[in-house]
Image (cartoon, rainbow, N blue to C red; front, side):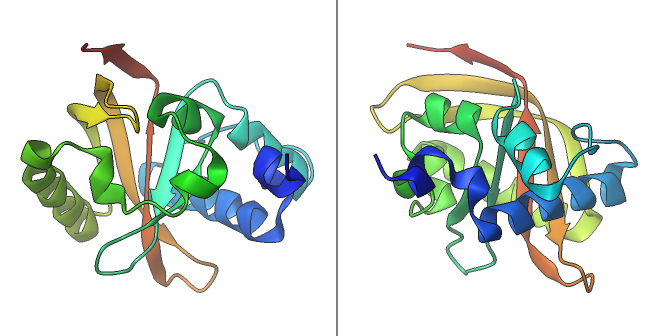
Length: 159
């Protein structure tokens, strides 16, 4: 297996995205997503291996996932390359997509929201309910908007 796929947290772009996720989460919520002691690569590995789900998408009109930690990849039953090529709207079933879009628009306006819940679907069709989700805007080092991140640690299988 390609090491970049097996250990995506070692890639420079993923290390930068990890920092943006962590820094933006703190910017909007005032809380720490994970312990940030250590080198950038150690922090990126800790985020990738966290026991909760962290994911993000970019700013395209049909946003594409650009980060998913190990828990996200497991839940959506994909590898890194599959996940980071998927439009994020496909994480929800068609009937859930309008609600999801409303949520993302709300985040764009407010900076972040917490306590979201919804139903998502894996690549093999397994449905699961996510709850207590925090979604936040990502900002880069110059405070430019560069996507949205989400984290949650609660989910239950539905089928």
